[in-house]
Image (tube, rainbow, N blue to C red):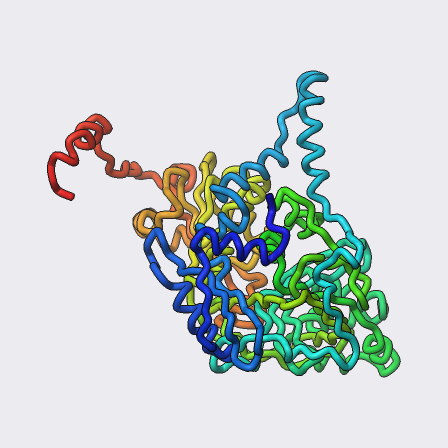
Length: 529
């Protein structure tokens, strides 16, 4: 059965020997982060990489508080979190849903009904407030104080404390579709935080839609990107508006809710590259094999996970920006200060004796590396739906997911590797990929030594490396401009005559199968190992 909440998940971690309870007093300012960083890097490079999940039970300055960290910090725990023996098995379930066999007869059609019913059972359901644990304690007005939460500061030069594992919920003003994203939140005071939704994120687009509704005539003149997700042009964009329009914009709000400490599948669903028309709550239900229970929020028109540990409710004021950062990021570098929207908290609800969930990002490998690998495995079928020649994909942790993608393809025609590169750069969040390496299908993309051998041997640099310009990740500190720069693709496939290669392509070395089999049979007798 699916985990109902974070507490079910913690019990399972305990039973599986994957949880370490920390009873020594630890400060949420830097100390917790250092401990979690060391735990995340335990066993690096071995099959047992990733130390235990950590439950801090003696938090300095917060008597009685508990903080969970590194909950996803190993391959085994990612499988436990999603209740599967294999992440590829979840990918196979997605393939089955995307490509069901065409029924050949009436009986075959009847056989498909249970599968359709199963999909229908994943949709979230709304429960009454009295049945929602997240409403056991409710703070409104003056009793709202975010500083009561044991929120971490993770790196020395960070601009302050940051909420690092939030499920941020917004609603599309045009379609009503809900979105759940994960955007860090810098704590400014007891009632406000930053909202670091980068300009290409769905929540930022929801805010742009609100701006377009408020002042459609001025929308073409204003850099809406800057007004919703930071940027050096934010101030100049505001200056282009007359006072009446500016008053209209600043008088409008967009409602936001934030869940902290949800069941693992729901937390994970907040980071997945969901197809545009698929809600993350549905993805959570699909992963859990059980619908997620939601409840109406107290002060905003949004539904929130009923079993979450904390719910923060509030709004962002259109056109209001504040300096956010620096922040020690998953690139291994600090993301520097920029202007981002401000989240005003109108209500905090939580369970009795709530458990705060947090993560730390930094030089890989860390907890987010395992979450990223799970995304890679589970959502490979969605990439293959668009680019069916793709055999496998690897997003190495050291490439921090948007800096390097290695792709193997079933090559059928000249120039296909370049076609795949351009297809990836046109695909959702994959558009930010800085470097793409394309290899043949017989290359194991998960074996970086093999990929390095193929790449360095198979390319003529001038011929096989291509550059293009386009959007890049907001965290890319090396790009020529914020959010805009160059990307590189490397065609490391075997070259064909149709691609201008006229010499014979040499075969790779491989021992005779019969000889390998004979040596396998006598290997232990040789006493070499």
